[in-house]
Amino acid sequence: MILLAVAAVLTGAVLSCFLAILPGLHVYNVMGLVAVLVYGLQEAGVSVAPEIYIPCMVGLVVGWSVLNTIPSVLLGAPDESAVFTVMPGQKYLMTGRGYEGAMMIGAGSLVGLFVLVFIAGPFVPRFLPVVRYVLAAHMHWILWVVITFMLITEWPKFGNRGPSGWRRFAAAWSTLSAGLFTFFVSGLLGFILLYRSPVSVEDGFQNIMPAFVGLFAIPWCLLNAVSGTEVPEQRVCDTLNINGDLLLRSGVAGGLGGGFAAFFPVVTGGVGGLLAGHATAQRDERVFMMSQGVSKVVYYVGALLLFFAPSLYLTRGGGAWILKGLYTPRTWGDYYLALGCIAIAGSVSFLLMSPLTKWTLKLMGRVDYRWISAVSLFIISALVFSITGWIGLFIMAVGTGIGLIPVLFGSRRLNCLGVLLLPIACNMSGIGEPIALFLKLLY
Image 1 (tube, one colour):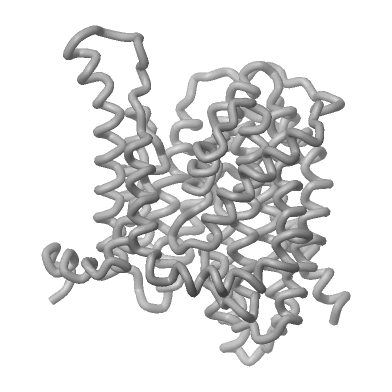
Image 2 (spheres, one colour):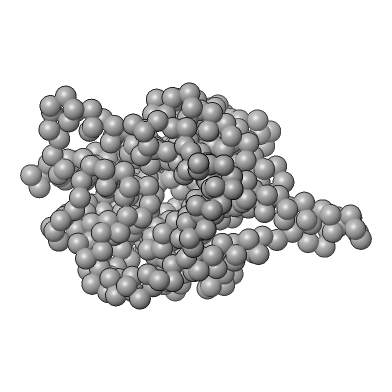
């Protein structure tokens, strides 16, 4: 059975290589398909052992969280947890150092895996129950503080440049107002999906997926497909010039942000990265990029790991919610099985990072990245349709309209997370239902 679990986790890690290369394709969408497959086999009378699909899903999440850095840097289509690596990553790409930028974030991912397996893994489940008990009554206002901080740190993008007087004031507020508008409109979409979702009950476990695809994946695929930017020739470096000081600082900054996002409800990796960047005030570009790699892995993989801790049973992140419908962990054996799978998948994924990055650069040299984005757009749309049908495509189209606002006006794409943050924060504060009644979403 151990060999079967190892084979399953390796399959998931290798499969994540293909998922990671396609810009905008999220691992949770593919996990949803795996869950549908398992449900279908069980209904047909074919029993699938948890020792097969759980390691496979863990391998998918670990491999994708490490390797999706490649399209984030080289193809410019990040998910919400990688939005802060885009500008530094694009700077590296446009100076011919895309390989170095991707590998630097990948090195941060390796630090994040080390934090999870050797530091957080053995000790955190024994202490987090106490933290959870102490903070249980305060989660709602902590979430409102996070939302407030996220909104007030949206800044004008013009600085001292541009027109003067009232025209400069209006230009500054064009980005600020676009950010606020994006947050509240996406929050309204979240209320609709939460209280009166048009998605069928059978597909309810993927209720939010079409909206997330539209908010984050489709706008960047569209932008890439119509972009006129020419990517310069890339060079492959032999060393990253990383020392122990960089590893330590990036590990602390990214570990704090990713850990906060993994533990607190609704807070995602992008928000965790934002908080970590401000809390540690990292000015070194290398530390900043590596810390985002740490934060992303600790968020995605850490949230899934908490689901297996017998003393917690926390359901955080889309991966844990998908697995919850298939299996309920019961013992420490489940936890250490997940921890071992993380170590194996993480090692394999990092070893694949360099050759996969080089292969992607060769592919970009032969195939225009606009065509790669167009193919990704088709695959993502087909995936949404296969799971949620025409109504899912409609929700995706609405999400795309909202997701294009920050892209066109230069505000933070992170504001699209209002689709989750606003309705959940209102519900945790006890005002969600009155708002839903006011919006005629309840009768």
